[in-house]
Length: 373
Ligand SMILES: Cc1cc2nc3c(=O)[nH]c(=O)nc-3n(C[C@H](O)[C@H](O)[C@H](O)COP(=O)(O)OP(=O)(O)OC[C@H]3O[C@@H](n4cnc5c(N)ncnc54)[C@H](O)[C@@H]3O)c2cc1C
Image 1 (cartoon, rainbow, N blue to C red):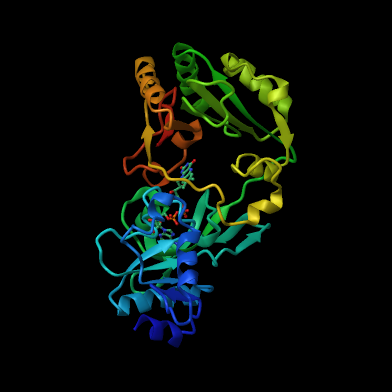
Image 2: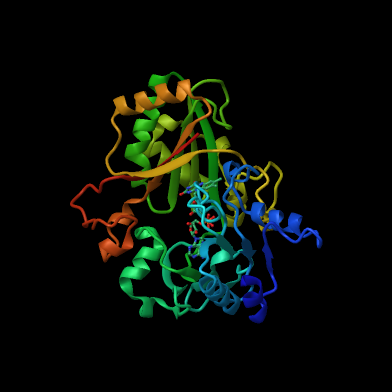
């Protein structure tokens, strides 16, 4: 039934499962399904939760009618953009009911308006930051702008509220100017557990308070890819919107224990820094960023959460003890700059349903913590 509904609406880019063996389109179906499965735990052929169809709309009209066809067939929908969900929520339905994946990877256009310094970004482009408007298709197939959906739904669709609020077609984002030269580095700091714990502890009091154009994240584990010697180490990824000399002088003042020197830091353009941090293999270039397929996929279990007060030194040491016993695991600490505390309209601007009031000095650090196994 879904086939005829889709065809009637001129949607041709879809495949049904297990596929039409006579036409040999089964490989196409599985290729399309697996292409954006980023966690191989969910790509196993033994995983029983396979969709009955995967639809790849190419226009907003096709996206809207894909939703209507699924509703007419009483089929559950999983919407997929990049497929990076840690638990495969964009392509798995564990309750066993029939479901369809609507994969928006072909809706990946970006329209830049230099005059207003904004851009409309279709959701399949998987870019979003500083979101100022959105186009959402609700369960009735209505296309809603921010003004029509209202403040609460606009807050919820940016990750503030759980659940599914519709299919997001595109975001409008406010653009930021970047200087011609930026600075990037990754340094590994091995040592005793006591030494690494001290560094991570100090990081908590530095990274969230660096100026907004400085990002400094911290990875901890006993088998980090960047490690220069075996055992527990911490790796620090630094990114500064400005020249190397300024980046080094800020870190020398705020975090001398890190011991950053000129040779650690590379100057580059902003787009080159995207390649630098992309995880693509050495020698990759800006044009490799256009390749949507992630080559280096793995099996993993990950969990992320927010930390609102510094972890005690004892807590860090306990985590290092666990990581030493489980060298396959690692923890990523991402800082949120102090600016997050001073945006207006607090409850709606943050990742948490709780209002955050503009603090008296000093602001509390907010850290996003990811544990990977
Ligand atoms: C290798 C890897 C590294 C990662 N590193 C980090 C990291 O460093 N920091 C970090 O914060 N996170 C990280 N993540 C997590 C990732 O950023 C989040 O899971 C993010 O939600 C992925 O976006 P996506 O579009 O790829 O997700 P998808 O898997 O496509 O979707 C995520 C959820 O949003 C829903 N959804 C997708 N598209 C739409 C739409 N158009 N409309 C409505 N709902 C939709 C899906 O149904 C699903 O529930 C990582 C994930 C992976 C696999």
